Amino acid sequence: MFLNSLLFLREIALSQTSKTTSYNDIPYESFPFQQTHPDRLATIARLFGLQSPNVETCKVLEIGCASGNNLLPMAEYLPNASFLGIDLSINQIAEGNKLLKTLALSNIELRCQDILDFNEETKFDFIIVHGIYSWVPAPVQEKILAISKKNLSPDGVAYISYNVLPGWHMRGMIRDMMLYHSSKFPDNVSKISQAKGLLEFLSKSVQGDKNPYGIFLQSELELLRKQNDGYFFHEFLEENNFPVYFHEFSAAVNRNGLKYLGDSDVRTMSTRDLTPEAQQLLTTTPSMIETEQYMDFLRNRMFRTSLIVHDDKKPVYNLNAADIVKFNVTSNLTPAEQNMDLHSSNPGQFIAHDGTAIGTSEPLMKAVLVYLYESSPNSMTTGEIIAGACKKLGLNPPLAAEEIAKLTAQIGQTLIMAYTSLPVGSLELTTRPINRSCLVSSKPRAFKLAQIQAVTMGMITNARHQMIKLGDFEKVLLPMLDGKTDVSEIISTFKDMVNTNKIIVKDGGTQADATRVGEIIQMQVENALKTLTKNGMLVA
Ligand SMILES: C[S@@+](CC[C@H](N)C(=O)[O-])C[C@H]1O[C@@H](n2cnc3c(N)ncnc32)[C@H](O)[C@@H]1O
Image (cartoon, rainbow, N blue to C red; front, side, top):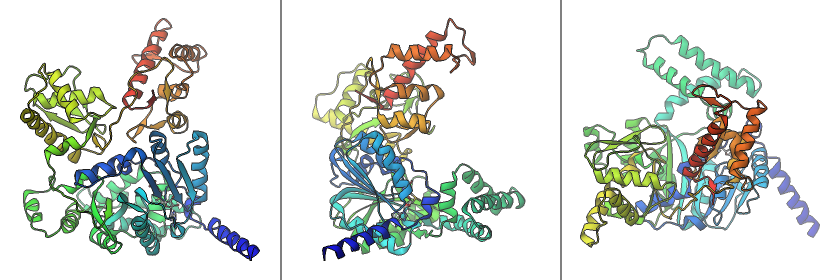
């Protein structure tokens, strides 16, 4: 009997490991996605009037985690939370586990497992399913929703992204042509190059810059030129690709005892960008699901990032400016001028990380945004923001409850508007205070993952879960930030590198004069440490 059970177990193990997936041969480059971060999911739940799980101690499941690059930075920055990632590709999971071993994190598991075989009883506060749902067959889609029901904690939030119609019809047309053409070639490498070649050929050959078909092919070509082969193959040449209409997705969610809460990119839930006629007409739709569906028709939307909760939840969608007190605020918006005039009503500009600019001529709001910028990467409560902004304007913080309520509403309206209308990551509301080291110690220490990423990718994941591109200087600097090396030793190491011609230091575009090298290196190290501090990358 015992022997039989052992044989049975061995059979199961063999059947699991022998499951093949195209992701073993052509891995999907895995990145952090800010829109999936527990901070964002918890905030949106709270914004819409729901209780949200404690982010610091939450349990997170990622389904289809590839090599874990979305979960690993979360695990390092949230040491008291726990993370489980599953993926069918044994090679991708092995790559993730190799990095995990170096990081020596004990709060994360990356497991090779088929979604269909996931039968845990554990409840998770956040379930992340990014880039899977419309790329797997119907039984796997159903299982994803079943897991989202069974394994989501009562106040939990699931994030599911997927390709949507009608937008994907246009991309689907390109996919069909590429599949037809590439089917004549035997291996995946030739399929990829032939499919890309076909798109180049079509966009060159379809004449006329006024021809809508030619314009569309050209814009798709531009987009696809920026994508790596892994993305290209799995998006266009992969067997499974089943975009759905939003209303179909919402109905499937409902069938599983869940409901749609909103979009992780809350900007898309607003009708602000539509014509006045369209905005007016959409006020007459009987449900939010219909409104969102018609917005997809108007925008020709191709991709959604939906948040899902249990169907007993009753979200409230009327945003109230005074609700700002439920959040901590952290801002990435950089003042366009160094010494902005806060007292006059001259317009002041603030720039988001993607270059989007917002302007305000209100002295109070200019003072709020400058104060938040100076306080970043740390978050501030509404009380702290009022006190900080008043100090900047040379005013005493108000004491009377009425006055405080008036300022809170004024600040709340602008900050909530900024959160719901700016690109993800420009200004964040969080459900927890964020306190990161703002002092550069004499022996600075960067988070371990960033030290590794600087060498392997030339990019690092910051504390806001954003990818930051590094300059050549920072790529060399980061591995030295090990908490054991003094800043003066770091500067000496750079000087040695210059003396042995390993690096060149430039001064205004040309090679620096030997007498200026030390000074320039010191300045570069100090600036780089400041930037890393602003990104929350240094351990206290
Ligand atoms: C398009 S990739 C997305 C990866 C990652 N979430 C991202 O967005 O970067 C799809 C992932 O789902 C995994 N996958 C596909 N079918 C699966 C299944 N049945 N069980 C577990 N993982 C699966 C693949 O191995 C692959 O890593």
